[in-house]
Image (tube, rainbow, N blue to C red; front, top):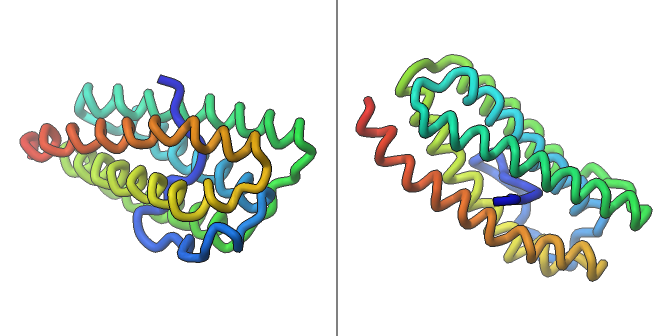
Length: 173
């Protein structure tokens, strides 16, 4: 399933509390690219570190889906001549992604798997919330808004997939 783009916040504090009207398309583009890259990076680590075949398969799906969406998003903003503009949210995503990777690198085995999956569940829930409350309402370009709406179901599917893996990884501990 061709996933998503965007955000996937660093599990915790994502400064997206502003109303949708307070964010520009250029800022949304930066958030989208950064969020996808954060999840790609976490997925790459999980593919090499996980001890659970289901977690590895999920991580590979995250790499594949988020890489595809990043390409679609990049192609769209290039065609629209929108230059992604870094902002507090994209910066927080990048910092949170680095913090998550640093934490995950300290873990092994079932503890790694559980931490990765728990983060993925929370991250995708944050993405859905950000899409609904900030990114979709804030997008002024019709094509960008349509892309955000199109990828929303994939984020829900990723969140639900991570939720289903939470119980199987907790049983491995």
